[in-house]
Amino acid sequence: MTSTGKTLKGSCILRINGVYDSLKTADKRLADFILHNTERIVNFTIVELAENSNTSYATISRFCRKIGFSGFKELKNNLTSDILASKNLEEMIDGFTINSNASTEQVCERVYKLSSKILEESMAIIDYLAIDLAVEKLTSAKNVFFIGAGASGISARYAYSKFFRIGIPCYHEADSTLYKMKVSILTENDVLFVISSSGRTAEIVECARVASANNIYVISLSDFAISPLTKVSNTNLYTTPRNANLFLDIDMPLIIGQITIIDILYSCCCLKMSEKSSSLYNKTKQSTDAEKLKF
Image (cartoon, rainbow, N blue to C red):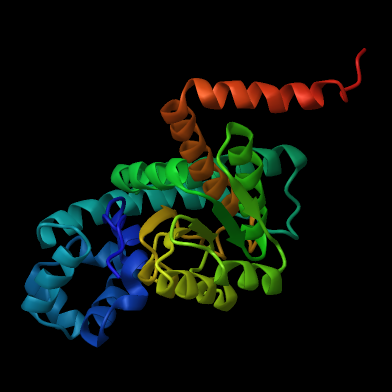
């Protein structure tokens, strides 16, 4: 299947991480060397990089093009910017661990900054064509089925709670057994919207495969990476990859990135549907206003 929405943008390190799992032996060896020797490489010539990474000039040139650069010079320039940004971020989170003695003020400041970093990187890799395609499918589908596992399930539930309020027929299921069964009976006019950070969650990928085999349009939302999920999806949307060490194994930054993409889609759908979405939103809002306490 040809997937739409894989335009490599953003920082050099982000791009390498995004394609890493799909790389073959020589390219992966080069990627490993770059990721572990970033500060050395900015002073290398292409010949020096080939010698030190045990690769060839041709491999390096091909690798640069594969991750969206015109050549080694552009890769080095981008990598220099990465190094500066990385140093600033390391200073920002220095000493910030779950068991640290950081004050409440420091924790608040750093969590806000980490969240901002996630959003900045997500914006850097956003694919506007993929957004347009997703909006077109969401607004024309007979039904949209949102699924996700773990923390991504929270995002799937959030998406459902947004889109049904503007008249997009949709539903959500959290139980993996039930959503597998529901996926099996989707029709060609339906859309399956799958959310998975890794793109490798077995039951989520299997649902996407089943849907794809039945000619169901699949939209995926995952980390910026080539994964089993992106390979079986029609349109791929991305958030920035999560760095477990950087984010202390918490899912907060991940969810922020996913929800922001969902909000972008929601806003675009509202604009496309115009008066209809506004009218339906007001109706759903009025239905709950009476339940709110007045003071």
